[in-house]
Length: 181
Image (cartoon, rainbow, N blue to C red; front, side, top):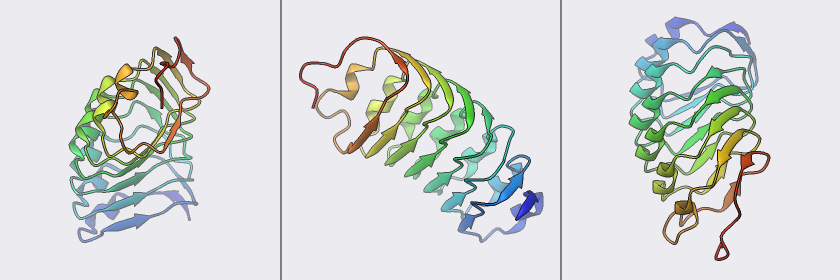
């Protein structure tokens, strides 16, 4: 498939899974996608989508998986992500996203997999990440994060289900605590 994602896609009100990955789609993610209120899984990865992630994505209240990796998305991660309380997988790897991780990420209690590697994200990590007690995978590698890693990530009870942590190729300062692990 090639071309742009048509706005008319928003008319498919009963759609629960949308997988258009691995194509040559261009343009932006259309705003009417937010009217797909029954959507559980959205996979637009491995295309050539540009522009920003629409803030209307926060209207997909029941969504469990958003995969937008391997595109050319720019701008910031919208703070409306904090409205997606059922989201389990959020994959934005290999884009051109910049700015900070929004603190609202801490409002997504069911999040298990967060892939933000290979972007241009920066700033200190928000301490709200430590409230994601269901998190199993956290990959923030190959960005421009700086400052110290929040101690809350290391403290007992912080991320009890974490199985994969990748913070490589960033600008973090300080050292790992002696009781790490």
